[in-house]
Structure formats: C-alpha cells, structure tokens
Amino acid sequence: MSLSKSIRKTFGRWVLIPATKYYLSKERKIALAGLEIKVPPGVFHPTLFSSTKLLLEFVNSQPVLGLKVLELGAGSGLLAVDMARNGALVTASDINPIACATVRENARINDVVVNVVHSDLFDQFVDQLFDLILINPPYYPKTPKTDAEKAWFCGDDYEYFKKLFSQLAHFLSKTGYAMMILSEDCNLKKIHQLATEKGYKWQSFSTIKKNGEWYYLVKLSV
Image (cartoon, rainbow, N blue to C red; front, side, top):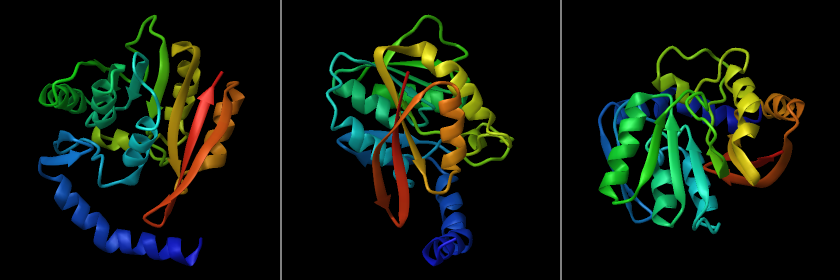
C-alpha cells in the first residue's frame, strides 16, 4: 500500500467516516447541475463521493436524446433525472425501496419522467433492452446486512458481480453497452475476470484521479 493511500485510509477511519455518518443521518438537499436532489438517510449520497459525479460528467458529454437508458442501482436518481432532462427515455432501479421512493420524488421535484423499478439487479425486468446502462456498483467483498449496506458491499464471494454479469447481456440493445465506474479500492482484477469469463468486452474508457483516489470508467459490451 502506498504512503498516500495509507494516510487517506487512516484519515478516513478517524475523521471522515464519523463526520460522514453524522451528515448522512439526516435528510439532505443538494443542488447540482441545475437540479435539486433530496437524499434521505439510507440512500447513497451522490456528491459526498466522487463516483456519481464522474458518471455525471460522462453522461453530460454524450448525446442521450431519445436513447433508452437505465441507471442500475440508482440511489437518489441524480443521473436518471439528469438524463431525463436531456431527453433520454429513462428507467431507474434499486434494491432499496427507500431509494426507489427517492428517485420518484426527485423526478417530481425536477419535473421529469423517470420509470422506477424496485428490483434486485434485473430480477423484475422482462423483455426490455437499453442503449446505455449506468452502473455505480458496490465492490467491497463483504455480505451486506441492510439495504443501505447493499450500496457498498458486493458479497464475500463477489455475488453481486456474478449475478450482474449473468444478467446484463440480456438487457442490452444490439448496439447497447454498460458504463461502470470502479475505484482503486476495489479488486479490479477479480471484477475484470468475472466479466470476461462471461464473454463481455472490457474497455478501459478513462482513468481519473479525484480527491487523491484513482477511478476507472469501464465500458462493457457483448
């Protein structure tokens, strides 16, 4: 482990984690990219962590007008609401019922249409194909005990990714692809292995350093 990463983890353990837990214990309202977004306790916060903001930068660099788009594991629905505002036909899903209710509320606040599906990955989807699927996955190898923890933990044996890669291909249009963001904190080699074993093309779209941490934007197609 590098010295900078060690310092970041130590600082996070003793300073950032307690402060973040307190901040997330109450409903918060944020303004970003011209949108108003509510984030209640138990829902992944889109601006405290860099991953969602980096995905937002990606979607705002792409023409999405008329595309069928899915935000898988939507949390607050920031990305879904933003793409709906820009003319995409948007579906958002989450395993957490509080997150689903939050996406509906944020779509209403911002006067856009987002189809919301309460689902464990693609379990509740039938015969739907998407041109773009956005994934900000849980990647810490631990079994989640609550809905809130499912935003962070992918299972001791990477069960989240095994299920994701067994389902994803069935919901991509002929030219469709998924864009997934990962960080240096995850086991990138393991996740890459699970994807390629299922036949996915893994393209490193961009590598970005944000707040001292490396992030990897990966394009998945079949």
